[in-house]
Structures are given as structure tokens and as C-alpha cells.
Length: 251
Image (cartoon, rainbow, N blue to C red; front, side, top):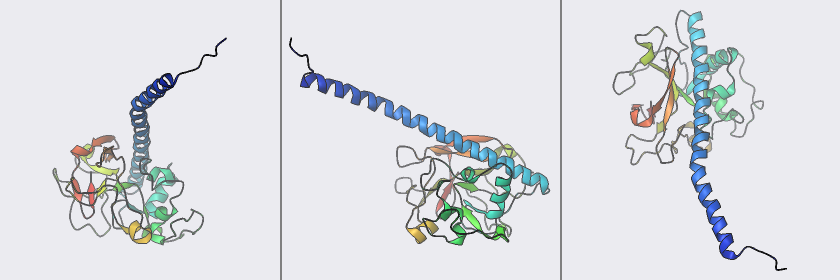
């Protein structure tokens, strides 16, 4: 009996079909994976919102104000302490869509104001036990609370925005409180980079800062927004504005 075997043409046809199926399925799988990350990110913001409202209810409607830090994703140890005490953890402060900042190995960002080495683990450098409001962490979200001394200018753009001091504001459903980090080197979308922003992490370790939820192009897809009333929404990047610079912070 003659042995039956595939011809070269038949093998090439099978390989071509498999390659075609992979090409069809990969975008769908990538989209589903990113959607799952958006859902986790939204859950993080809801936990943060719940904790901030608990803080306000214990403090005459006041929100925790910034004491230290420069960029909007800087937040004090004291504020993160309260959020963790009320149900959060390290993962709550980082968007899963941003690969550099993560909850498994983020001591360099988690203890940023202590200037720990880049490859430090969480247990390598002890945190201070006093004056924790005077130390800050670099997180994956923008915190739109005011500073203790009061910031010099409100966020730009229309309609006008304010730096928050209390949860008792007019139209709380329209006031952003915490947002996904969307950051760039400029406002011109043809030349600005959203994945190669140089700040403190670059100065220390040559690690650029990046935007959460990038699309397949060079622009962000959008970001999750937590409002003062506690609800969250996804906002497409086309509906965002550059509100603080430099670098450019979008929401």
C-alpha cells in the first residue's frame, strides 16, 4: 500500500489558513484584554472614591489636600494609608494598562520621595512612621484635590474646572476627582509623545513616564474618570483637554 502524505502545497495552504485565523483573532483578543484592564482600573477608582468619601465624612466634608509632590499623580503616604485601611491595597493605585508602574515591583514609585534604588523591593527600605503626610508616592492616577497652601491657578480648558477641597461642591456629578493618568510632552498631537515623558523617574533612572490606556496608534484611547458624586465614566481621548502643563496633563 502507498503511504498517504501531505504535499508541500497542502501544507502551505494549512499554514496560510492558520495564519489568517490568527490575524483575525488577535485584534479581538487584544481588545478583550484591554477591556478587562479598563474594568479593573474602573474598580480601582471606585474603591478610591469610596475611601475619599469616608475620609470626608470624618472630616467635615474636607478632602485630603496635597502637601508635597509636583505632578498630579503624586499623593501622600498619609492619604494612601487611609485608603488602604478602608479596603484598598497597593494595586488600587496603579492602572493595569501601564506596564512600568505595577503593584508587584513598584518600590521605586511607591516610595518615590525616599529616593530608593530602582530595583528595590517593598521591604528593602523602611518607610517613616511619623510625618507621613510629608512623603509622597507616584501613582497611576491624577488626584485633583487642592494643595494645603492652595494652587496658583485652576485647571485650564472649558468648561472651567476647580481644584477640590471638599466633597460639597455644586453639580458633583460633573466635577472630576480622580482620573486615569494621560500625560504628554506637548499639546500638538502630531508631535507630542504620550509614552516618552521625562520627569523625576527619568532624571533618576532614565525611565520615561507613560500614559495609561494607549490605543494601537500613538494616541491614548481615553481614560476612566471618577467624579465627586462617586460615579465613574470612560472618557474617549477625543473628548479630553490638556488642563495642566508642563508636562501636559489631560482629562
